[in-house]
Amino acid sequence: MEAKLEEKYDIMDVSLIAGKIMLENGAETYRVEDTMMRIAQSYGIRDSHSFVTPTGIMFSIETDEPTKTKLMRISNRTTDLYKVSAVNAISRRISAGELTTVQAYRELKAIQKAPMFFPFWIHILAAASTSGCFVILLKGSFDNVLPAMIAGGLAYFIVLKVANIVPTVFFSEFIAALVGGAAAYLFYRMGFGGDLDRIIIGTLIPLVPGLLITNAVRDLMAGHFISGLAKGAEALLTALAIGTGIAVIMTLI
Image (cartoon, rainbow, N blue to C red):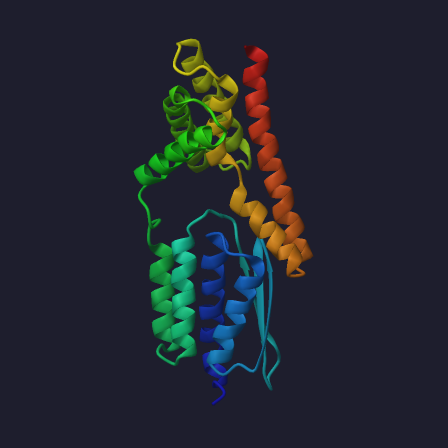
């Protein structure tokens, strides 16, 4: 049964907040659009349209009345695939008819306000472990693992903290690479590790925008050229900021 006109605004709000949570936490553009339209269709909206870019979402529904359109701005983006998975689970429950618009909206709001699934210290520990493992993958000796882990964990700590203090895009990656590279060189000079190149590479691995590059390619393959090119450009500039930070350190030494 098609939704009543006075309910359509609630349906739009549910679709928009679902799309916003997904886009802010690392979902691909085409997946966000598909989820929003599926939610609207599950609530009886026969014709809906979504247009998603990395910085905004436009969503409209067509009825016998004039077409209704809403715009939502996206200013912050991070990576928390648990929230993406949680929104997908709610979308499936909506499709199964288990949630009203009010219930779905409340659950989505709870997901949006919830902290990241893993605490801050686990993020740092995971980054440090990644740095150490990449040294081994690069056939480095085990004496390079510990300095790479410490420098990599420090670099990731810096990128998270600086991003919260200074919202300037790419500045946090530059500072993190600068500090991480300096720490790696300091450990090398102190005799902890014998291969500076592998220590530095391991240090920088947690900063590499891997998910962003993957999403850019997937969006391009799905025909979302604006989003794909925008994410690709963001990934390129992030890599440039990381490279610049290390270049400054290598020049100074």
